[in-house]
Length: 418
RNA sequence: GUGGGUGUAGCUCAAUUGGUUAGAGCACCUGGUUGUGGUCCAGGAGGCUGUGGGUUCAAGUCCCAUCACUCACCCCA
Image (cartoon, rainbow, N blue to C red; front, side):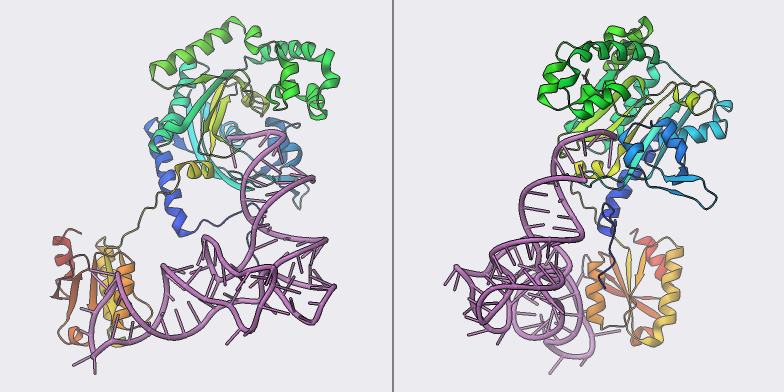
């Protein structure tokens, strides 16, 4: 019988790592709230059609990476492979748009995609993201990007991160562009790879993403999206850039940046990091002005981004934060355990962090443990102390100790302002 | 789904051309006289060398298979 272990592409987050996670989570909460965004939490699984409709049937995510199964009543259920769709579903379901013209939401949590794992990519992974509903104006785009920029800065990543920006135009422009691109490719279609040929029908824009050199050559001189921009698209994109400049957020126009999900329109962007491997996208997002409608809501513009928390943590590197305790409670005598427990508890009520040793080992062993816990103080309760209703309070940093009555220990510690 | 790399103690790694009982550091445990941590010293525990087969007098070492991990392709965060 071989050992049971985590499934491929899933990992335990052990205490040595969870501190880093908590730090990142705190930054996300803090920065999002600083911009007036509120947290939304949606279920881990949803109806399958939510994702197929929004993300797109032909995307890799929907066509081959979802964990789906049939529930006992016959509905097809899927572990969420992304979160924008769920947030939009929730926005519609609870008519959030009716409560305020602009809804600002952020989220974090696990997502599931059945891919081959590699650096920065797992089957269960975590994202945080923000979404803003209700404004189609470029200042909203700029704000969303600014949130991303702030979080990256707080994590110390802005130095090694590059913002790639593009506009794929309004849905109208997209249709026109799609045709123009197809017209351009069609004469040489036979020279493209099989996947590109499939995309020619399903999602021609994705062909632009190709990394194959000979295909890149064939694409030279292809029409670019901006050729098909409407006047509004153009003004919108220019305004986004102007606002980013005003906020001193550096960016790079990347005309090849298309983004894989079907629902994007106009602004798309991505932050890449030099600290990652081949999967170098820390964060990606864009505008999705038609998505709410697609999922059955009232036409409502929206924009947001999602970012991979594992990738953030890789990019952030090792920055161990040592946890500290206030007090390590050492008890030397079984007869003293009740007193030890009650004193420890009292101190915790007073706000101190206290570990009480549960192994009944020697004083030496308990003191060693106290030292390892990085506690500032050890409280020792032995036979002698029991007799006089006192404890020994030892300052572990200075090595000094004194006897304090049990009655006064709480006040004593408060005065020491741990 | 396709390719490459790697599997020896909890972790990081050793182990001559195949050759006795597979080692070290860190971590862990116990001690170094009565009830005191870190440093130091001594001792201890911990491995079916990923698994299964094969070659050989002899396999951690060579061969095959399998599994796992990992990196990359694809795609994405």
